[in-house]
Image (tube, rainbow, N blue to C red; front, side):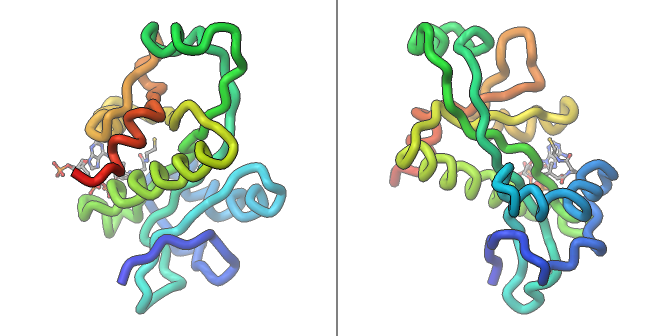
Length: 168
Ligand SMILES: CC(C)(COP(=O)(O)OP(=O)(O)OC[C@H]1O[C@@H](n2cnc3c(N)ncnc32)[C@H](O)[C@@H]1OP(=O)(O)O)[C@@H](O)C(=O)NCCC(=O)NCCS
């Protein structure tokens, strides 16, 4: 059974390859340390039968922004505030396991965790920087909208996040 757990020493970080050197290097060299320092949190998707094998991972961090870069409808909601938000700082699936819905599963988990953070401390939504056009399209499928003039930076507003988890 698949599970999503915090990254730990037990995970085989060296064997992970998502095809993007920067993301592999982040997982191997930086992710756990940053977690220990309280700078970000990295979560790993693994199969219960082989818990050390990393099928995919994602990293969440907090950020603060002004209303200016937001789409006008949202900017108008928050005049003159410093806005707290969550950022999906990294997302990657092992090359051997791409295209099986694992990326989607981890986006859903990032959404759930953003709602928890919003409920406990406040957050206007979830931000992500897409690496390229294909990945930008991947995020748009889940309701992320581009910031005006910065189409690779995408924003999933809190209202959309909450609607996504409401039972239909
Ligand atoms: C992008 C990534 C996380 C997607 O994960 P995945 O598990 O392969 O994606 P899923 O199986 O959940 O795919 C969901 C949908 O997005 C599409 N998709 C998959 N990978 C995609 C990609 N790289 N770009 C655009 N769309 C993609 C799939 O075709 C699928 O659509 P379908 O349901 O109509 O078939 C994964 O391909 C990856 O790790 N890529 C390398 C690292 C990377 O670029 N990370 C993003 C950093 S911003």
